[in-house]
Image (cartoon, rainbow, N blue to C red):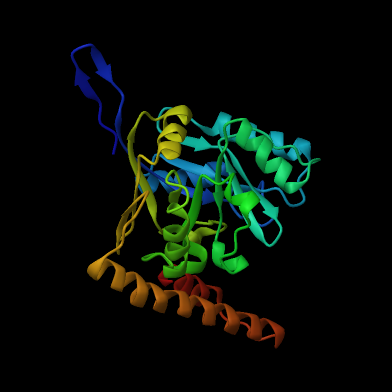
Length: 278
């Protein structure tokens, strides 16, 4: 919901806006939706912005420019796309958010550093995939850690080990932020944690609020600040309920892989129901 606030010096466009972080469109090799389709779905969910993170795998310079231009031309007064890319680095993936291009001719760490120097917001994606390991060189460049990835952690609670990784490293770098991402590729991936902030509905205002940590992460299960300090019942819910959700997703992926290897098919509607629930 967007509200204009009347001020003594005129009309402010600051408002409460909500959006998703970490989405993939058809500009990524594995995305299913166009930006127009993503926009329509987000508007139906009363969202105002989407932070795109297109895979650089299989991309060239022309592909990068095309993805960024699509974000620009697809944004308007009611919905904003923030351009961004997801870059493989060693055994992990890094989100480079808020830049129009990346230099794919450099080494991964040089690409990350160049993006940082151009004002990108640098986030470690789904840290459990690389066993929660962050080397010192990368940590110096990170602005945030994705403590919650809907695709792997579920739609209701973050992963406790990712929270622990964040808690460990924020002691060393007070500016570090907790991030929640959808990792959206298809329709069933909608419905996870949103990001909420008071900002103008512009790329510049949204990106500045993200960089400063002026946002809250929300789902039907829990709400978190950008620097969460989980205690009491909230911590227990993340440990136990979040842990159950992560385990359910893990075994669902294992079963799906086994069925695929043995040519066992499941009706697509049942798959969608399971994906939407998890």
